[in-house]
Image (cartoon, rainbow, N blue to C red; front, side):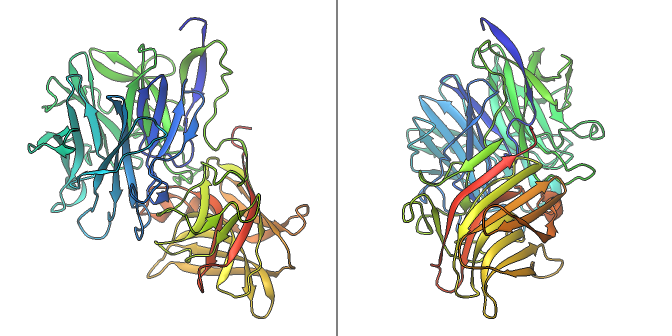
Amino acid sequence: MANEKIVRVKNPILTGFHADPSICMANGEYYIANSTFEWYPGVEISRSKDLVHWTSVPSPLSEKRLLDMNGEKFSCGIWAPCLSYSDGLFWLIYTNVRNWNAGPHKDCPNYLTTAPSIEGPWSDPVFLNASGFDASMFHDDDGRHWYINMEWNYRETGYRQFSGIVMREYDPKTKTLGAERHKIFKGTDIGGVEGPHLYKRNGWYYIAAAEGGTDYLHALTVGRSRSVTGPYEVHPNNPLISGWGHDDHISIHKAGHGSWCPSIDGKRTYLVYLCGRPLPGTTDCVLGRETALAEIEWKDDWPYVKEPDGTLDNVPPDYVDVPVSADNDGVQSAPGWGKNHYTFDKGIPVDFKTLRTPAEGRYSTTERKGWLRMYGAQSPWSFYEQSIFCRRQTDFKFVAETKIDFEPDYFQQYAGMVYRYDEETQYLLSVGYSETRGKILQVNTIMPPQTGLASWQQGMEIELKKGPVWMRLEVDHKIGWFSWSQDGKVFHKIRPICEPAKLSDEYCGMGFTGAFVGMFCVDTEFYKKAADFEYFDYHGLDRE
C-alpha cells in the first residue's frame, strides 16, 4: 500500500457480546458475523474497510420467514453463524437452536439464506440439516460447495457428545445436500470439537475448529489435508490460539472459536476469534464473549499467530499492528462505543435489539412525534412476547439514561429501564402503580433460582407526581446504581446497588450472552398500556 502507516489496533475490536465471529472479505470490505442467541433480529454483522473502524449493518434475520424464536429459552436461538461470499452472493449459514439443555438431545436446525448485497434482500431460508450446530459453508476453487457442521451424539456424555465434524456437498441449483456424509475430523485430546470452518491455500485444505468448551480452556485447533474430505493432520504447535496456561499474565482470555480471511490487498491473513475479559479480581465476564483480532503468519504452510513483537506463538495478543493509508485518522471505533444519543424519529436504532420475535405491534415511532411508544406486553420472565429494546453493554464503565412518560393506573402496569442478562437475572427501575400510593417509582431485581423459580425481589417504592421521569444507570466495573429525577436536573440515587458481575455467563452458569441495558414496558392485564420514551443515552467511558 503506497503512502501507508501502521495503526495499533487494541483488542477486542468488537466489545460487549460479540461471540463466535465469522469473517469474510468481499468487494473491498471486511465483514464479521456474530451469534445473537435469543436477541432479535438475528445475526450481528459489522463491516470495515481497514480493520480499524467498524460500523453496524442491519441484522439480516429481521423477518419471521427467516427467524422465529417464539418460546425459546435464553441462550437458545442463533448460534455461530457463518458468513461467506461466492458467485456474487453473500451466503449466511445459521443455526436456530430450539433446545440445548433439556435432555440429551440438541434440537438445532441449520439454514442457508443468500443475498446479492450485505443489506439484502435475503432469500427464503433453505433447511439443511439438524445433526449438530455451528454449521458453515466452504466454497472450493473448482466451483463445488461443501457444507460442514459439528455432529452431536446424544448417546454419549461430556465431550464425547461432540463426536466430530461431518461434511456433505451442497448443490445450489437443487438447494439440497448430497447423499454421501463424510466425517472429516474428530478433533484432538482437548475435546469438544465444534465451530468448524474450511479454507484452501497453496493446495492445502485447512480446518479450523473450536475445542475445550467456551470458557477459560477454550482453544482454536487447526488441521490440514491435501483432500477436502481428509484425513486432516493436526497443527504441530496446536492450538493455533488459546489463553489456557497464560491466564496469569494476559488480558485477553477464553480465546478460541474463530475464522480467518485474506487482507484486502492479499498480502496478509487476519484471524478473528472469540475472547472474554473478566472484571478485575474475578472470572466474571459481564461484557460476554467478545471479538478480537490477530495477524496470521504462514510458516511451512502452517498458520501461526504473529505476536506484537513479531514472534510466532499461540498467545492472544493485546493489540495488532495494521497497515492503513496515510490519511487514515487511526482512531479505533466500533458499534456502540463512546457517546451515543439515540432518538427514535427515524425508527429503532441499529444498536438496539428486542427478544425472540419481531416487535411489530408492540411499539410505534410515529404516534407521538420524536418519541418511542412501547405498548405493554408480557412479563420480564416471558419467553414469548416481551415489549423491550436493549443494547449491549460495551464498556466496564458507562452511564445510560432515558426519559419516560408513563401514567399507569393498575399494579400490573410498569415500565422503565432494565439492566439484564436473561429472564432470570435482571435489575429493573420502573414507574408503576400502588393502590395506596398511586404512581410510584419502584426497584426490582430478578435473580437465578437456588431452587425452583427465579426470585423477584421488591425494592423501595417512591411516590411520584404526574409527568415524565428521567432514569439513569451508572456502572463502574463491579458496582452500579440507579438514579432518578422529575426535572432532568437533580438526580436522586437509589439503593440497592446493582452487581454487574451477576450479569455474566459465569454467575448465571448456563448461558452464552452478556449484559444489556435498555427500555421495557409491561401490562399483564390487557397488553396495551403505552409508555413513551423520548431518548436513550449510552456513554461508554472505557476509552476516555
